[in-house]
Amino acid sequence: MSRTIIIRHRITDFISLVKQSLRGEELDFTQGSIRRAIVLLAIPMMLEMLMESVFALVDLYFVGHLEESSYAIQAVGLTESMLTIVYSLAIGISMAATAIVARRIGEKKPEAAARAGMQSVLIAFAFNAIIGTIGFVYATDLLILMGATESAAIYGTPFMKIMMGGSFIIMLLFLINGIFRGAGNAAIAMKSLWIANIINIICCPILINGFGPIPAFGLTGAAIATTIGRSTGVIYQIYHLTNGKGVLKVKLSYLIPHFDQIRDIIKVAAPAVLQFVIASCSWIFLAELVATTGGDEGSAGYQTALRLMMFFMLPAWGLSNSAATLVGQNMGAGRLDRAEESVLKTAKYNMIYMFIIMLISFVFAPTFASFFTNDLEVRRIAIQAIYIMSTGYIFYGMGMVLINSFNGAGDTWTPTWINLGGFWLFQIPLAYFLAKHLGMDYTGVFWAIPIAEIAITIAGFILFRKGRWKTIKV
Image (tube, rainbow, N blue to C red; front, side, top):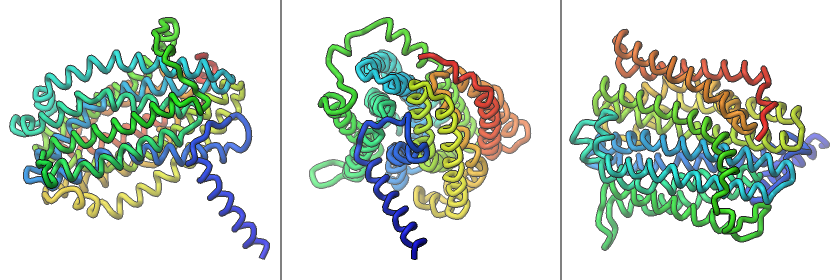
C-alpha cells in the first residue's frame, strides 16, 4: 500500500513539474535539484524545437502531394538547405545571447541581461539584411548551384524568394527565443513556436490548394503560409519582451547601438556563427552531391529523410539547450561543479531519447516515407537514407549536449574547431570518396553522415573532460 502511495505521489509531483515548466516563469537554476532543473527547462525547449521541425514537415507533406511533387520536394529541401545559413547565423547569435543573458542572470544583473539581448537583435538585423537580399535576388541561380535541374529551379524560385526575403523573421524567432532561454523562461520560447505552427498549419492547405475566393498558389503558398506563421510568433515574442512583467524589462533605448557591448557579443557570437556555417555548408555540399549522383528522385528522397531526421533531432537539440542555460547560469553564480554535473545528466537523458528515436525510425521508416511522398522511387531512397542515418542517433544525443554546453559557457571556439575538423576535413572528403571513388553514389553520402557525427561526439567528449570551458569569461 505504501509503495502505491509513493508511486502516486511521484506521478503527482511530475505532473505538477510539467505544469510549472509550461507556465512560463523565470527561475533560478543555480540551486536545488539538477534533475528538476533539467525537466523544467527541457520540456518547453523540446516542444519548442519540435514545433520548429514541424514547419518543414507541414510544407513537405502538402507540397509532396502536388502534381510536380519531385520538383516541389526538391525545391523545399534545397531552400531549407540554403536557409541553414540563416539558421546558422540566427543560432550562432542566439547562442551568444543565451550565454551572456544566462551569465548576467546568474550574476543577478537582469538589466545588463536585457541590454545584451537587444544589442544582439541589432547585430542579427545587420547581417541578415545582406544574406536575405542575396537569396532573394539570386534564388534561381542558387537552386541550380545546389544541384537542381533548370526546370526544377525555375519551378521553385518563387518559393525560395519568399523564404529568403522573409528570413529576418526566422532570425528574430530564433534570437528572441535564445534571449528567453538565457533568462530561464523556456516556456515563452515554446509558446511562440506553437502559435507560429498553428497559423502555418491552418494557412498551408488554404494557400497551397485554394479555398473559396482564395486562389491556389501551389508551392508558393507554402512559403507564404510559413512566413505568416513565423511573423505571428515574433509578434507574440515582442509583446512578452516589452510588457514589463518578466525579469527582462526591455526598453526602446536598449536598441541604441552600444559599440563596446556589440564588440563583446560579436567576440562570442562570431565563432558560434562560424561553427554552424561550417556545419550548414557541409549539409549543402552533401545535398549537391546527392542531387548529382541520384538525380531528382535521389535528391527528393534524401531531403525527405533529412526532414524526418531533423523532426526527431530538433527536440533532442531542445533538450541539449537546457544544458546551455544551466551551464551559463551556474558559471555566473560561480558553481562550476554544478555546471559540469548538469551537462553529464542532460547528456544521459538525451542519449536515452535518441535511442528510442532510433528504434522508432527502424520500425516505421516505410510508413514515414510513404506519408510524405507518392513517388515509389523517392520513397525507396528515403527509407534507405533513414535506416543508414539513424545508426548514429545515440551519438548525436551526446554530441548535441556537449556542443551546447561549450556554447553556454561562452567557449564558442572549441565547437567551431570540432565542426571544422568533423565536417570539412572528415565528412565532406569521406562522402565524396564513398560516392565517387567507391561508386556508392548517394548511399555513400548517407553513410558519411553517422560516421562523421560519431567522430565529432568523441572529440567533443575528450575536450569537455579537459575543462578549458570552465575558464571562459563573458
